[in-house]
Length: 147
Image (cartoon, rainbow, N blue to C red; front, side, top):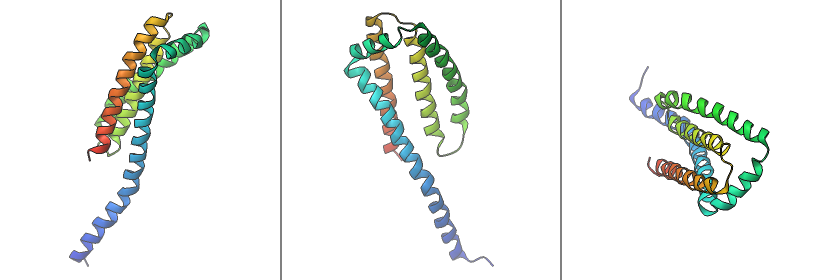
């Protein structure tokens, strides 16, 4: 037999079951914030030094080719998956979209980095991507603080 006071108990049980998911998603969101703030800071604070490091890293043509191919593969995966993630009606879908967006930006950076051979264009590109990462970090922080 149904009693009206049981309805309140069921709501409490349901909300308690959602708490661990919400808690885990918030931890993941803080992780996403960290993985966007760090590259933004590195690219905006020391773009020339990072350009020199990347030029040394990409001296090997094989490494450059692997970065370009891997970048294209992950960029395609991210761009295909973003619309599907955006259509999900789940609480974690916004974090999945942001994670895929970060992946797409990072992949695009790999592809573009693999095509540069001089320090000045690398430095300029680091500044651009630093701004993009900073924008994603701000969006992530806003999503974290607005409930």
